[in-house]
Image (cartoon, rainbow, N blue to C red; front, side):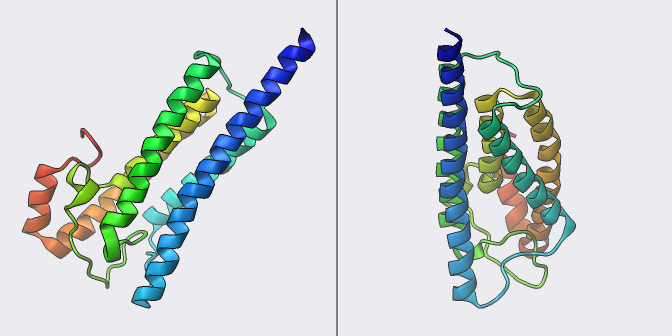
Length: 202
């Protein structure tokens, strides 16, 4: 019985690690492909060098790496078992599906206006179509959904605390970008901001 229980646990740990790894290969693969192709097309920088962007990117990279480590080793501190494994896996997979679809829609709909962080000297179009009709920051929402999904998948309190703290860093980056967009587009952006929520319902 002990061997059977240990085997089942190892299988769940392996499955969680595979889920995270596959999601990152797809999600980051789309991100890298967009950045490479757009930079070649525009022949100019598309990544801003500001502390808000650096902080958010560093948090997300660390969160993803820690989640993968926790999943792979299966010995993460702060692990709790509130949900059954099927429920936790099902909920996280549903959130990751929404996250991936939203991320892909963001990259597609923003077109040549896609940037990572704020580049003060560049002017981009104000995109209000596609997924941007429902949220002003769909790519960030996709990342926030990812942090929730990984936390549920691994049922880990350390990840929960990091996700809450990291959302503050992401929020700072969003505010920075929104101020930049308002300075570029003025009244048009203010009307857009009144019509469309920053996230999904807020």
